[in-house]
Image (cartoon, rainbow, N blue to C red; front, side):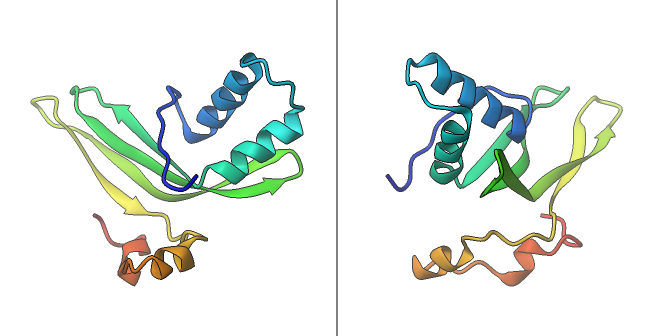
Amino acid sequence: HEGSMTTIHANTPRDAMSRLEQMIGMSGFRLGQQSTRSQIASAIRIVIQLQRMSDGTRRVVAVNEITGMEGDVIQMQPIFEYILHGTDSAGAVHGEFRATGARPKFMDQIRLAGITIPSDTFDPSRAM
C-alpha cells in the first residue's frame, strides 16, 4: 500500500529496523529472520529519525533510504543528516541539516509523480 507512515521508538534508523523485526516476531507470525527482514526491506523506503535535543527542541537528524537486502542484512543509505555544532550560552542547540551526497534510488518514481526536486538538494556542500 503506497503512502503509509508509522512511528517506531528507536535510537537510530538501524535500531528502528531491529525493533520492527522484534515487533513482527512478537505478533505471532512465524516467519524466519530472512523472510522478516526481506518483508521489512520491501515495505519501507525511507526512515526519518527525529531526536529530542538537549534544549528540548526536536530535530530531524537522519533520513535514510532502505535500498534492499544483501544476504540477511537490510541495506540502508543515508540521504540527509543533522550535524550538531554545539550549544550557545543560553543552551540552544545549533547545527545544520546536510545532504550526504547520495541520491535516493527512487528518484525516477518521484519524477513520474510530477515532483521536481532541484539537483543541488543532494549537494553535501550546501546546508539546508
